[in-house]
Every structure is written in C-alpha cells, then in structure tokens.
Length: 112
Image (cartoon, rainbow, N blue to C red):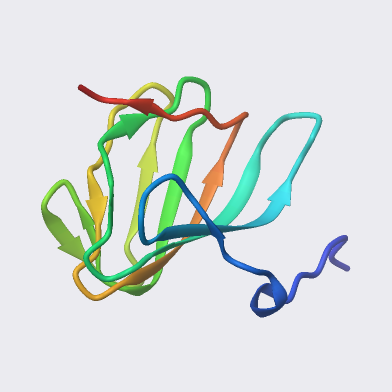
C-alpha cells in the first residue's frame, strides 16, 4: 500500500520567479531535501538556462510542448540532468506540464 496519496488537481499552482511559470509541490522529504513537483510553463513563457548545485533532476513531459535548448519535445519525453550540469533555457510554444524530481535540496544557479 502507498504511504501517501495526493489528488494533484486539489493543489494550487504557486507562481515562480519567471512570468507564466508555476509549480505544485507533490512531495518533499525533509531529511534529504529531495522533491517531486509539477511545473507548468504557460504558452510563450520560459525559464532561463541554469544548473542545480547538489540535485540531480529528472523531467517527464506530461502534456504540451516542452522546448529544451531550442528543440521541442512532446508528452512522454524524459530528461535526466546530473547535479551541476547546465540545462535550458526551457520554454513552451503552446504551454506544458512537467513532472520533475530533485534528488537533493533545490537551488537555482543561472548560467551566464
């Protein structure tokens, strides 16, 4: 039996620092800092290129078009980024929803 069950439709989207980008935290483990989140990127919105110092990141495209570094990917696409590796920019032409996990506490370091 599962230890936790969440109706994600009952969770509110929380806006992030980038216009048109929001997140729902589905799970956060305080002892390790790992997280599972849903991220929504509205049509025409973007997240700049960045890295995460300690967290490996996985991304699964649930719906819509996810543009990673200029290439568009559809539902079912899966990505893995190791801690410290730059990725992005991320954007969406028509909007998308992503399921993302982080293996450690999350930070956001812009890539210049």
